[in-house]
Amino acid sequence: MTDDQPMHMSPDAFRRAGGAILEWVARYFERIEEFPVLSRSEPGETRSKLPDAAPLEGEPWEQIIADLDRIVVPGLTHWQSPSFFAYFPANASPPAILGDLVSAGLGVQGMLWTSSPSCTELEAHVLDWLVDMLHLPPSFKSTARGGGVIQDTASSATLCALLAARERASGYAANESGVDRRLIVYGSTQAHSSLEKAVAVAGIGRQNLRLIDIDEHYAMRPERLADAIAADAAAGSTPCMVCATVGTTSSTAIDPVGAIGAICREHGVWLHVDAALAGSAAVCPEFHWLHDGVDQADSYCFNPHKWLLTNFDCDCFYVADRAALIRTLSVLPEYLRNKATESGAVFDYRDWHVPLGRRFRSLKLWFVIRHYGIEGLRRHIRRHVALATEFAEWVAADPEFEIAAPAPLNLVCFRHRGSDAFNRRLLETVNASGSVFLTHTMLNDRFVLRFATGGTYTERRHVERAWDLLRTSAAALQVED
Ligand code: PLP
Image 1 (cartoon, rainbow, N blue to C red):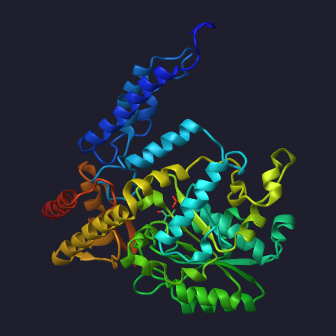
Image 2: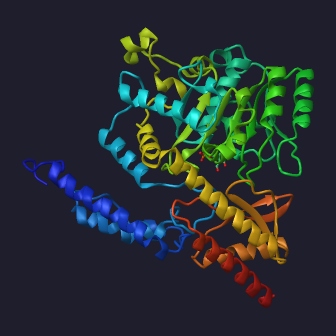
């Protein structure tokens, strides 16, 4: 490129390149069932196809697109495949993709209200919609004393909850002078590992995380929590935060939030509720019970990027008292001062999370809610719950297999009646086939397979084929033995 050539794509060239990329993504969806769900790439394989140095001059756009197929696709595990049953889903949808595209096109940075007012106000408004849609307590609304904010992930939401809890427990002194007392944090033994990470990052210390015993359904035992809090307080420590999980990662166990909330109230402990996956289900009236007791919580989060058709990343984090969060995370350098902030009439979302800068993420959520409508989202959740329920019935009816945990939503934990080693081999075999991807967990010290329905395009035939593969693979492995 010479100095007199235009550096950037003209609007027309952008239209053509953008059209080609949209076509490529649409074609990807059409072809997705042709690929092995779990990537077969070897370590270093993707890098070996990349040149040692970046190109000195710009390359033709066609070549860049072609390299998506040559370099990127072989190294993908196909999260949007209808036969992806691993972890929890990260379901994308066309309206969310388009929302992200608009966000990238606008390129705004919504750190302050004044840095893009619609970025802040659309987010506050859509998150208020979700309070009603998910039967969450009205105190979480921005029109009340609370409010919601989009974080990248549930891990960040838990960290922010813990930072606010730490500040409140220390009389808002920890930010100034460090943590001068022993603060204790509680979750069940099934709490997500992000709690442990948050405890470490917040400077509370991993040894001050208490993992509370669970019942036969893998839910926290509130009486054990009460005992632990009382013992810590008696020993001179300060119980700081409890993280209750609605829908644990291993098995979608539901902690008794109401009972836990009552204990937190009694001891003045911050209650954070992590409903990363399960929260989305409460869009259906029959799953409103998932949020029973959440009115006692100081904070709450769920991930539309898991089960509400919204592309990663999008976690909705709510607080009942936004003043505590803002006081914890607010820093105002001279170069960010402005009239709107000083008026006190606006939210500056930089005060609601760790980073300063932020993308216009509410666009994709707004597009999703408007495209599907509440009824469309309910149909989406019900379809996956029905598929998981049917899968669980097949497992329960087969004498070779057993159900390993209650399956209230879209995750079925199950195992072959053989040894742990046999179940491991079974998992490796079905995943190596390329037809499905499942992951595992340990429950009750036993190796358990997890089958999570929730892919945007998953239909009954995919679930049926997966079950068929599991049964036939188990039979073949038994013959080999
Ligand atoms: N909490 C729960 C209950 C989860 O299941 C997960 C992930 O599966 C997380 C937190 C972490 O999610 P994220 O990737 O949004 O941090």
